[in-house]
Image (cartoon, rainbow, N blue to C red; front, side, top):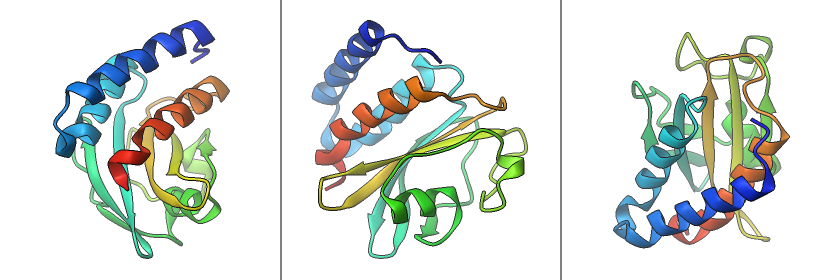
Length: 154
């Protein structure tokens, strides 16, 4: 994406306003809708919340629902990101044996943990329809978005 630092700061300010205006139960859904409408390459955006050893889908925005509404920590790219407590960026999901397929058109995925220093609380999961749809600027930006969501998933 090559999101410049100034633009990232502006976008994070926008998100702050959205979170302040959203009713608490809808903050995650509002974030998903905002990310998808602001960044067209983010074709499907979801937020999962960690409950025990499973990630449960709390909110999403995209052209269709996913069948993966509850993911064990040991499964898929989402499970790996939660287990390792770090962002996982997959340039081509067709070359990633751990990928849990949701949509035929998905070609790339980025999963960013929502965490405190002590624990993973959930994660942002984004699909793209192009190979290598995401880069380091997406990762840095989404990690800052995840920081802002900690209070909404705790």
